[in-house]
Image (cartoon, rainbow, N blue to C red; front, side):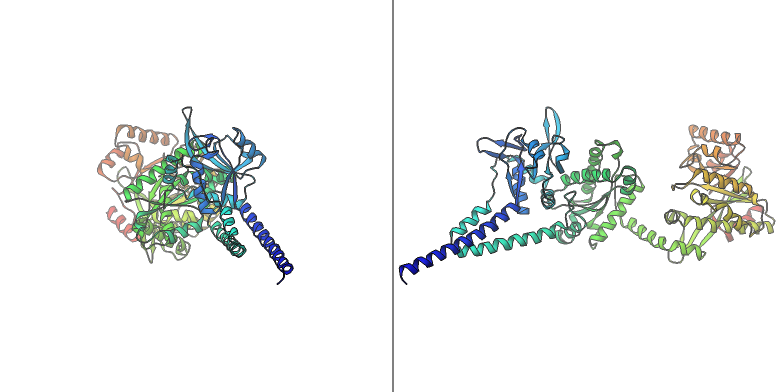
Length: 634
C-alpha cells in the first residue's frame, strides 16, 4: 500500500474515532447530568456542615451523609461553589440548587423548599435548635423520593459515628474520570465501556422505578409494599424473635374531618420525621395506610421492648404537643411480639398489632401489647359481627328478668335483659354483643325484638293475676331517636293485652350521637301512649342531671358505682343528695348494684324507693324467673 493510501486510511480511522468518542462523551454527559444533585451548603454550621478554608470544600456530618446516600442512589452530590454567608437563601430563591443543606428550621422561606428532613439538634446561644435539609422546588420527584428513602435508612448510630469523625475529608469516586481512563485504553474499550455504562444506567433506572414503588414520595419513608418486603425478606427466622411490630396510628378520619386534609398531612409529616429518627440499624419504618405507621424494631426481650415503645410514644406526645395542644395524646400504638407469633406472615402480624392498638385506644392508653386472648376475642367479635342480624331474625336472643324489690323486700317488678344463645359460641352476655350491635346499627332491631317479648310477658302476667308488676325495657338513645320509634312500639304493644303503665321504657347510655330534640319528642309520644319513662345510670356516663329537666322522667336508676361509693360518708352524702333531688321532682328512685347485706343496709338507710341487685335476684331465664317468683311469693 503506497503512502497516499496509508494516509487516507489513517484519516478515516481518525474520523471514526472522533465520531465514536463524541457519541460516548454525549452519553457520559447525559448520564452525569441526570445523576448529579447540586447542594447549597451551609458555611457556618460546625460540626454539622461548614466550609473548610484550608481544603476549599465543605466538611462535617452532611458531606458524610451525602457520601452514603450517593452509594445507595448512584447520585453524585456536588456542592455549589458559592460559600458566602447568605448563599443558601439566595440559591433557594433563584432555584439554583436541588438541596438546601444543614439550615436551621424556619431559616429558609418555606415557599422555596419542600419535604424538609430533620438531621440533628444543635445548641445555639443556650437554645436547642433543629437542623434540617430540604429539597428546593426545582428538585425532581425522583431525587426527592430516592434521597429521602436513602436518608431514612441511615441509622442514628451511623450519624453519631460520622459526627464524631466529621473532620474526615469528603470524598467520593468521580465516575467520569474513571470512564476517561478507559477511553485512553483505546477505542474498542471506549465502545465496550459506553455500552456497559448505558446498560448500568438503564438498569439502575429500572431498579429505581421498582424501588420507588416501595417509597412514599411525600414522606420519604417506606409504604405498605416496603413493609411487606422488609418483613418477608430482611427478617430471618433466626432473628425474628428479636423483632417487635408496632402499629402506630390515630383517628385519621375524625382528625381530617375536624381540621382538614392539609393538617392531617402535616401531622403525618411530623410523625414520619420523628419515627425516622428512632429507627435504628436493621429496623424498618413504613406508612402503610393513611395515618398508620408500621415500625419493626428490635429488643432483646419483651420488658425492654415495652420500655422502648413507651419511651417512643411518650416522646412523640411531647414532640407533637410543641406544635399544637390539640396534638396531645393523638397517637397510640399496638405491639405484636414476633417471638410469640413465629408463624405469622406480614399480614397476620400487622393484624395482631392492630388489635393491640384498638385495645389501647379503647382503654385510653398510649400503647398496648397484643395477646393471644385479645386476638381470639377479636376473631370471635368478627364472627358475631357477621351473624348478628340473622340471629335477631332467627330468635336467638332470649329474654331474661332481674327482679326489683321495694323497701320491704317484696318483688315489685323486673328489668328485662337479653342473652344470646349462639349455636356456635354458646350463651353470650350483653357485653359480648351490644357494642357490636351499635357498630352495625342492629341494636334498634334487637331493642324492638326484646320489647315485643316484654309485652308478651306482661300479657301473660295479666292472665296469671300478676298485673300489678311492671317490667322495664331498655332502649338505647340511638334507637329512641329513630323517626318512627313511637309508631313502631305502638304497633308492637297493640298485639298484646296489658296495662301500658306497667311497661317502663328505660333510656340507656350509648356513645353514638343522637338528636336531643327528637329524643324528647319521642319520649313525650311514649308517655301519651301510657308508658312510663326511666333514666338509667343517673350521675355518670353520658347522662347528666339536665336530662331530668329536658325529658319526662318517672324513674331514675342510680348507677352501681355511686351506690358502692356510698359506703363511706362522702359517697353517702352524694347518694342522699341525688335521691332528694329526684323526689323533689316527683321521680321514683331505684338503687342498682346491691350485692351484700352491708350494701342493703346502707341503701335502706336512705330514702330510695326500689332496690335491684344480686343480693335479691340475678338475671334469670323466663322458666327460672317464674319458679323464683312463685317461691318468693310463698
